[in-house]
Length: 212
Image (cartoon, rainbow, N blue to C red; front, side, top):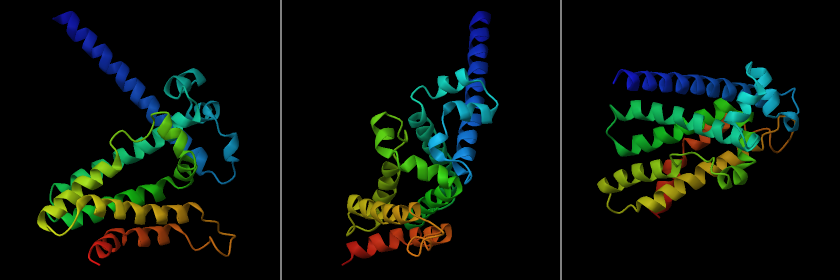
């Protein structure tokens, strides 16, 4: 029994060391991708390791498939933050429509917080998904469950259609935000504030489509 406890304790320490290194590397990658002075094409696992103060070997242990693993880790870490904040909100909020709106808001705020890091990641989304690095707890499933809860109280609403329309509205705003360019006559208006305002309408607009 004593030997088993030693093994468990050692495993826990190793996990804590791994998790701490993972967080340092994700933070490092996010900082580099958000740096407007850096050419994003020059950012690699070695540079991320150097910026994090870890060895290159450690970084490749976490990101063996290079930047596709980095982008996947950024997405997963960001969505964990969303999930934790949503869980806190759900402890006291009972109204389904407010739950949906909060979920959308939290995702939008996390996108803005990550900034150019999430822009770079989204431009590689096909590679992320095909590599198996996409968010473990699919955001659409979370949204669909919230929409099902809403439809239980509103029988004329189809939960799946509502969820798809919310995602469509959110992703439309996301695409425009990703194209933001302060020097462009066309794309300069798609700021962080614009994105937060427009995505706050995703649910009401999706609901309006179902009510037509």
